[in-house]
Amino acid sequence: MGLIFQEYLQGPRIFKCSNCKAHSADHDQIFSKNFHGRYGRAYLFNSVVNVCLGPKEDRALMTGLHTVNDIYCKCCHQILGWRYEKAYEEKEKYKEGKYIIEKTRTMKEGW
Image (cartoon, rainbow, N blue to C red; front, side):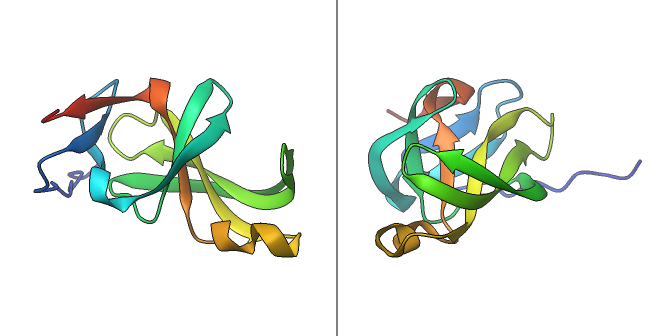
């Protein structure tokens, strides 16, 4: 295997993978804190770093049917959440291209 290149975030408040401590998201990229994931509270982010996308799948979530990709830490492969690929209901379209990260799968740095 080759080297894994990581992106390091410079913001004062960073979310990191709870397993390997790789940077995952900047606090400034939070779109909403009012989300719920598989393991409890979750945040909706505009962008994240150091993740790999799983295959697309249709998933029935609390807000309706969505096409999503699970997202994994690219360093340790722990599942962190998912990416909204497509929302089928008009009022949910704002989620497309955004990322859910589970609060229990991350830790905070600089808080």
